Length: 268
Image (cartoon, rainbow, N blue to C red):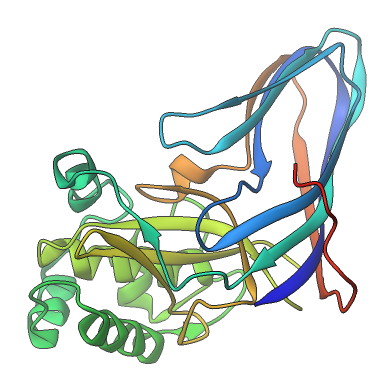
């Protein structure tokens, strides 16, 4: 187990004033069997209202609106998380988790990805199989920032042989789902990374176990989970609308450090 301090900073800069800005943010970590959030603070500006809730997957949401004209919008989430408390989390009944076994537009395999999955001889998503898939995906493409976009599919990234953490996760999802194994996309933070990260959770024997194909490691005590879903679109950090014809530039910075101090006594 490690106690990690984190600071997630999200900033949108518009090139012209906007108004009637309604936003939904998905950047609040929640406690589960693997991680315990022991301290949490958040700050959003500008805002006229702000509420908390959950989406259909159980991820925490911050949502609200700002009616006045503005050209900048910021959100900060910081706190502490005790991670590595368990090697997995309990799943809902299989009938409810089957949704994670179906391909999405971002994870639909083509012939090349199906052949890749067939060679791996995936049967059940057991830990040894999941780790083999993780290693194969890690070796299949090279990390290259800017080679892909948020719209790039698993098949496209696999064909290019390049991508970022989102692409590694989508390719692993595509391979597992092509073999009938339910799995889900995870967005979060990684110790020492400096930006958002993505990995995969695989369902086996009633438990979700997490694997990081970008770094080729089983998730343990250096990852803080923010959200999960069928693919990256379900885990979008920000969704919103505003009034105005402005272009928007997004800047995200993440700081995660190991805290050698004691845990806070009162969890969030």
